[in-house]
Length: 203
Image (tube, rainbow, N blue to C red; front, side, top):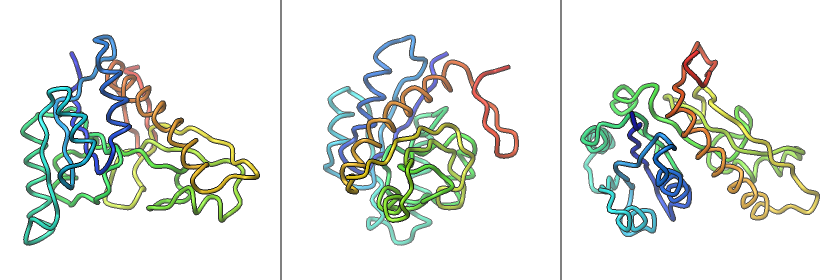
């Protein structure tokens, strides 16, 4: 069985492209069945359209309340019957309706080694703190900010002459590889969550 992915994006969609490239191989075990965005006219949507993948836009200002936006986003994703929803640079916090509908099936990639440096500026905060290792975390999404159970992590050394931009670019490379590899493993081998411990595989 091929695992159905809905991917949510907010910008260029480089992580989406990596998933699309991987999914072109039937042995990968997952396929992108829809792409959603929080704003129109972005490169991530164009990438999906080039592959003939359905897209939808859930723009927060288009709704009277955040709850209405959350309901629309939930319904738009449900239409595509996803097994997993991947936040690939999606810059909006989803609401309780969405989390209830997709509990244990919504994952996010974050550019820091959680639980250190959650939020919008992981690489900047890591540099300011003076850590020697930065990196990326793939985790399930819960009602907190980057607080869900951790699926996978990859470390990226911090160099003495790093700026926020240079560190971020190296993290992105490692983050993209981890996302593709781990989603593929989840699709092919399954996963279990025991309290906060995530184990890949069916054994």
